[in-house]
Image (spheres, rainbow, N blue to C red):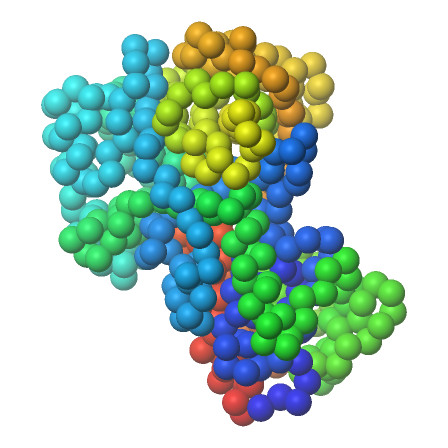
Length: 445
């Protein structure tokens, strides 16, 4: 067992999940986070007494999710107060249509004609009852190989499901990853289609629960400290050097931010060969988005999530955060967030961003006649380089970054850029679960 603490770089879901599993085995960890708060890409801010998420995040598969499994493994799942996100609908201009919570609900889905529902079932049922192993054969196949043969109505269904499940469009998604999502939502295989969100405020409250447990176990979550370099000697980790020059001795480092950034920033030249660096850099897939928070003086919808469907809508997702949990807003006010993917060059164009925001407001006022009267303020954000929630076909599941590398002993990688299934925070926690046995084997040597 190592006499030095395990150093974890990054206090997002991946790093904190890893720390949680290690301290539960009485292994001392030191987590260094460059930000002043935990949560990584899920961090929140307080703005005009509303808690604003950095994007919209959601826990898929609820008690079957990887995050929940990690917390259950260390017996702190009761600390996580969650609100179920179950009131989800499509909007197609003619009205609202209930989102199907299971495969059989597709038959009753009013969004598409009955004949299209039967066509969808013929596609979805074989996916739902296949094996995870079998889906690996589909990881290089784009989902569009299936959707391109469908009618307009069925394509709209896939567009909406992909926006909910992956926060992305069908052309970026692997058929294998989509099939795994359908399997995990199949109750006949022990799955669930339930979603959840912290009932205590922003999504980073999950990270805070994790961080609190780690410090209770006499380990450290150190905020506002950056790692400048990981020291390697004779193919072994010997420590990390912080940006202030402090040297922290350790023989085990876990990197929990994107591996393709880490290998280019934290190591001396020559630690990794060019072929390995090239392979890892393939995972550097980003997207660009415009997201707008709107504060309202009244509730304009009792639903929790609405997906406008059809090519004419700029708004791809409307998330009624206050309907999920009132704790994000002061009494008498309501918070929603509306998002859409955009071209990278659009984020550099203030007039284009303003145009997108105005179009969103126009669409909201058409869907909800009381929107303009209720609007208190808006806060738009445009991100040019946002970590893609799901990698493109051929770069998912086991084709992502491995958790360890042969030429550096004591170096590990976790997070959603490493081997894992699912998306975002669920993927990050799943990677920690998969990496944990490898870590323990190393530490027990």
